[in-house]
Image (cartoon, rainbow, N blue to C red; front, top):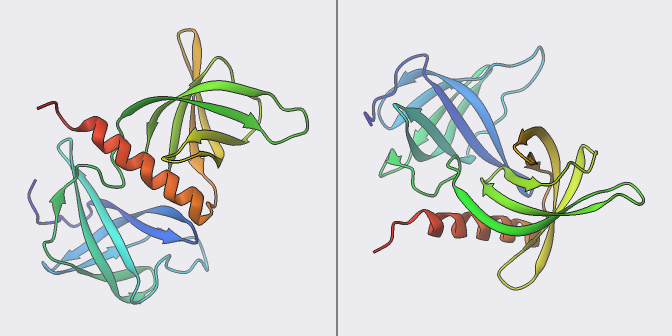
Length: 203
């Protein structure tokens, strides 16, 4: 992948918001090598979604390949911001934020209303922003809890439903994390690492 950004190219700015990761779309204005200017599409009165001095991750895709770079917000002037790109600059993505990969493991999905069903499900894939799970049916609620096995104990991850897809004899639920506690975030990070291990080719 060419390390030079093109004016008008779309990137993702990934920042930590409380105990979760937030992905924000932006457009390249200028690429000055170690500094990049990005423009955000904002509603009237909406502030630029980053602050000066904040550490973020930039994610780009080109020709089916993804690359990431760590950066710091240099300055902000609505609707754009300048970023200092840290060394070693852009690197092809292996296990970082935007990638997804299959990770088949059992889990449970439950609604939050009184008497809501608890369904056996399978964790299909995972990203830093959320999960995709397969189940016999949908619990019928937009906000659900997904119970997964962490490295030492079972943990419940609160999620919001983004989409439901019918796949043969089951449905797949695409879920985005809600605000996670530090313990829940540790499990989400561990799932990402486990996902990365699944992706590694056999020796």
